Length: 542
Image (cartoon, rainbow, N blue to C red; front, top):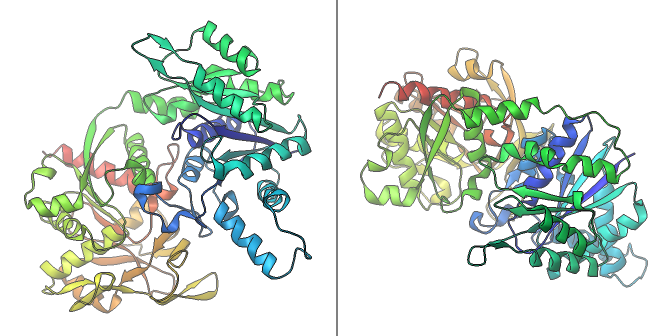
């Protein structure tokens, strides 16, 4: 029997519903349960693929090619359960389907309305494709009271009635602010948030209270009294040094016990949290430190590179070191024209991105890493910038560039108009839609057994996730090889370069895919583990 846990948020956004859902999923998993996590987003975009990273953070890509909310990255990193397209839905996607059905006459002449048609579609999404899972954790984006979120809250209210008390539970995350001038924690924001939720017809079973300090027993009792929950069901969600401590803290606070009690499942084994204890130990007691420079276009918002940031942490966990990330805006780096930004760094990483802004800074960073023999990791656009830099400065092609940025004398990077996926040919052209038209999702790559990267992966065939439109132009492969770059990883048909490396460099690797999307704290991606290992070795040479 599958049970459903609905996680809502109140007072303010960015309280951490996604992290709370992921950590709860990890604790339930540690008790031996099978979990699945989903996200319902109220915005009208069909998916976040066309949104500016400063608006919405990174776009997380699944194996099956869905562009999804970054919270799905949290879900995967904490549970190891691969997310699917069916785990994230937006208002835009729901309305798109409903209107398409209406145009085909599938509603038999009925007036199409939010209730029941939109709410029925939401309920269908929540309950579909859950297989044999013990728990489905469903996070509702935004905050309670948002106009656009009302159909989703109404849908889960209906589900609560339809499933019954033994199969549906509501967790509400709120803010418990401390007012320094008064010297008090204030419970009113939580009380009003719960009042709003109850006004819509949902009585929360458990409250998660975000706070920067311990919550006194009398304050917890006050919240319980006014919000109509048990004292033990008021769970503190305190600030921690690392997000990977959250599963341990939630268990210590009794969240999983309260969940099971509400479902009448109190007689279950205690969770095995040893893997999280080991991760916490590695993070709190590192044996060294490395400094990594990330030359990016959206460094003003760390959520724009959320999976990348976490994958670097995972590389540090694998090597028992603290990773100090220096976020450098690529435009600033190119404009300054000096190297003070990179003084003392042990590794340089150039991540993905779109558009011409800031590319000269990324190209310069690749050249510095090559000249100074600093470990270099180029991801997606970062790989392409390394190709352009080598073509310009080592291969005698000063006019080398990418057709993404306009016409150039030597387009070493070009638009791939067709490719193979799962036995079928997919097509793309420059006049088509922007959303959902990239090479998206998992693709296989075959690695040469004589390469450095084969030694990192330890196998000849891998699968990694992609999100890009442009590819390295293999017409220049021989010219680039003479300049020092080889491509030991390609698509199975040999037409698409997936990996580059510089054989005579300590660690210089570029990949067309996004390895950060598959990294986890308990299973760091081998490329990130190897990159940080190389950075550790470089730090000992300084």
